[in-house]
Image 1: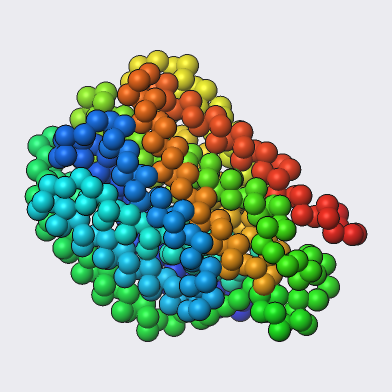
Image 2 (image 1 turned 180 degrees about the vertical axis):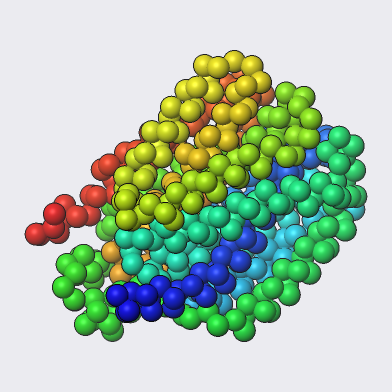
Length: 415
């Protein structure tokens, strides 16, 4: 018992440090949700065009995702996270000239650069938190990270609302806040570089760690016997699951403010708080119940079934009441990422960092799914557009019940 308590205490400081970095990631993503209705007026673009904000940010995950593995191998998780903060600072700083020039392409380029930093930070923190403790409780630790992120996701709209009035949009109002944000991120990067964040590795991650790789855990032997990252079917299916996971998550987070503005509701920038609070409630359940009362797989199944049910209600219940069902999707989405990521990278051994970089590429779903939503909202109405959630939840349900378990069937003696 003493050793367990000591282990728990040893991860508290690293989790707090990584959690504060994840708060920055949440803030950066919250900026996107605020910007969707903003750019429609600031740059005079259509609803579907405004969702290019998501594409610009998350296409960086696809472009840069493959590079995160080599970067993490070279500099480690800690320096990788610091580098990510600096990249995000550069991206935010680029918003200033885009505002001065009133250039939508340059604005999207700024979000793309910011997305490069987000991609590196996401790959770093998700794997770091997954392997720093007991694999069975990885979803609980990632849920803690989610609480940090979603609080600051909502705070982003609150802070930007002090500088930018969505009812009277002026592009130049973005200059002051993003100067300040960029400077803060540069300073944070320097502080975290000297922080007491230990460097860690997954079991069997080093080729020379043969004793660790060939312990009594036959799953580590499974990873050690592979010669290519493409020989892990549960990982490949996990990339697709991540695509739909982040797609479902930002289907709720990234669209509710725009939906509220379309309905003519007052203070549309505040509706994202409802989704964030719902997700925080879901993360809290993950911390309390996983793995003591609920396995990661079962949590994933329950979450997807709730998502399917709520999406159906959104489609059936007509009128403004439907917007209050969108936050319930946040509750359903909360434990998707914390469950999918550790299930996908489990037992990768020496391929852990490479596997993480592959999973990062799946985050392009956060750009594609909301973009599809935007086109449907423009053609068929906002409420109908949430139908894209069905595809997301049904695939994740498949991954939870079957896809994540495929690897165990290839190991003699595995149950």
